Image 1 (cartoon, rainbow, N blue to C red):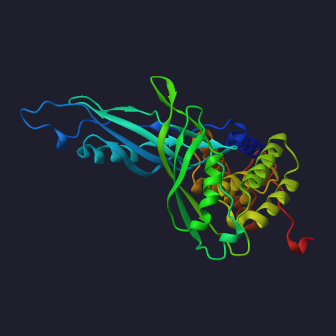
Image 2: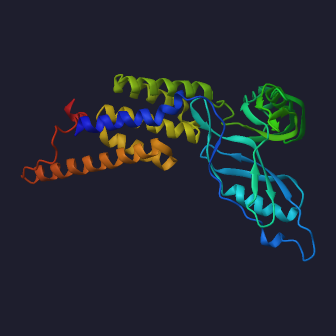
Image 3: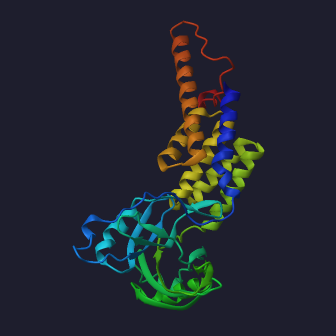
Length: 348
């Protein structure tokens, strides 16, 4: 049973961490229910119906859910709520960058409403490829609140570069120059019209600055990502799980308080796999349950659910065997040797 559980864990580790070597890509639609012509917007008797268009801008978060939906352009405000409600119901495979799921802003879809037909949708706007986070200037920290926001507007050229960058609102003007420098480095896939790249004017976005602590700046996300990718590779190679666990302890001690949801989920998946290889089945079960609560989708989600079931069954059988042994009975609940337990402090 022990070797079987270890095999399940290694298979899970490869499925769960396979994304760490995948190429960067934008958010991809998974579920987009069709939208009909709103009955409240039907033309009055005698009026000639004309196609109506609503362009909606939104963000897809790291879990694939749609947030911050707003209308950018419309030919008839009557259709706005129907378009917004439709987009909010959509589900996406989140964008991937550096091997991890990340949020993607500034997605845009245009709905065309034609009477007695389902609404047609066209996704054609400029799409971000690389959006470097801004540096938080130290000179701005003393007088800053824990959270500050800078609102930026810019154009995206036919080559995908940003230009004509301006600040149209800000909660702290000290941060404006930092935001402008960051946006200047961003790279986009250009907007397409008739299959040809064209300039996209008036892209708007917000940049949020947060102070995790007055004394301890937020951890470098790239460093955390590289360390976790390295550990995932070590697990796939079958390296010593105890040294992997020691490295994970160091990462948790240094960065754990500032983990993002994605990083925390990846951490539990990695530590669960390492504990499983080390035959710490109860610890592995705790980690896999934590990862599942944080949300694991696709093949990794199925693998983690299977692993949890196997671990729960094994631990229940182990507990039953221990109870029977304490009662003076002999109970054989496994076909292979039980996993080794860590020695108790008294036994050292």
